[in-house]
Length: 313
Ligand SMILES: NC(=O)c1ccc[n+]([C@@H]2O[C@H](COP(=O)([O-])OP(=O)(O)OC[C@H]3O[C@@H](n4cnc5c(N)ncnc54)[C@H](OP(=O)(O)O)[C@@H]3O)[C@@H](O)[C@H]2O)c1
Image (cartoon, rainbow, N blue to C red; front, side):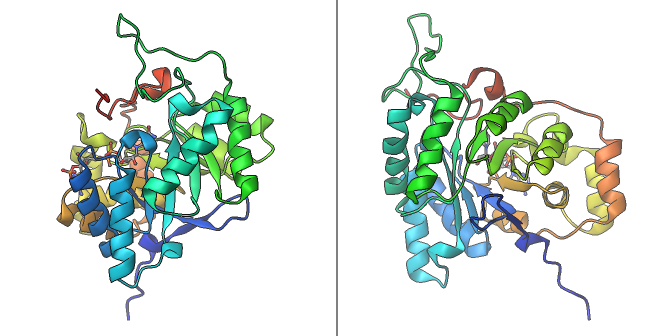
């Protein structure tokens, strides 16, 4: 009898003893709240048990409603689901961190957050305006707070018990090194752009050495040109293993040791993205060595301005 493939149920232990993260994650960066709610429900129903959210996506309420409805109707419990959310750039001042965290918990309708991330290492002018701009439409940054000071405030959230693990998002390797060196509670997670066209092997290696889980955002390359899913290496493997190109890219992400956060609004694709199976070793080698394209898609690491979230005005 054939052994069932369990890749889709992979869990990655977190370094602070606070459990494990399902490697297969659903990203909720969907601008329309009704579409967010529907996609989140579908993702839960097909088997996703890890959801990536953010106050900046302005749809945490829709994610929270979807989770509540599924928890009530189906045999899925809150404790079976891993929820990540993120502190936005305008809330980096230490006194703003806990109120922002509590507001996310309230919108998501959850008591504890499994993982809380600093969304980007850039502090913007504190306030309710998520995209503060001057008269020349330039971002107004906040030079009155350091990343380490914000990190200390996240450490206090862990101390207080409502936040199980903390980490960083959209960081460079140097910024990650700085926080690892300064931290009392080491980052458990680094969420960065990662896909076959931007594999970030050096960052992955550093994270491996330091017990940090890499969450691969945009594991399909944001669906942008040049398209990961049209790459001849990926499509040839897909044909060989009788899977779709998306399933190949997602299986590769898990087998190289990362979690991934994939987004789709389409029910059939949500199902497809969960139904991954292990790739043979030669396929893993081909993706690593035969694909030479190396392009970052999201400029957010240089500016703190998200490339894929509409401006809030
Ligand atoms: N930390 C950050 O700053 C940051 C930045 C970006 C993303 N992220 C995280 O990463 C998640 C994913 O990012 P993303 O949506 O930009 O990139 P992605 O998941 O790499 O790509 C999504 C695109 O691929 C399409 N797609 C999904 N499944 C497919 C399939 N099976 N076959 C063909 N096309 C498929 C989607 O279209 P349809 O919807 O039409 O299916 C959408 O256009 C976000 O939701 C977020 O959680 C984080």
